[in-house]
Length: 59
Image 1 (cartoon, rainbow, N blue to C red):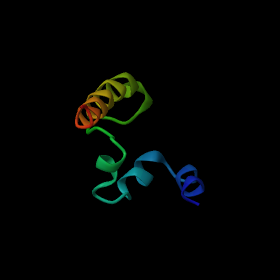
Image 2 (cartoon, helix red, strand yellow):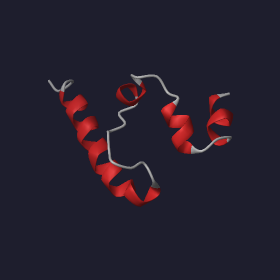
Image 3 (cartoon, rainbow, N blue to C red):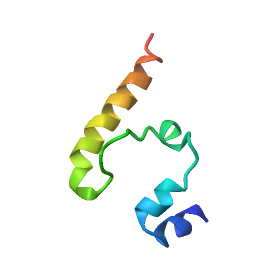
């Protein structure tokens, strides 16, 4: 399964192998680093993407 594939290789290698729309489909922001040290920046940027998308559903 994909979870086993993901855990069997380094994150950078696995992430680079995803198709070009993967980040868009999963609301993954483009940040300078996906390492744990940058997690708070990642979360802040992802929140912006999610809020923007949710606003498109507002009545």
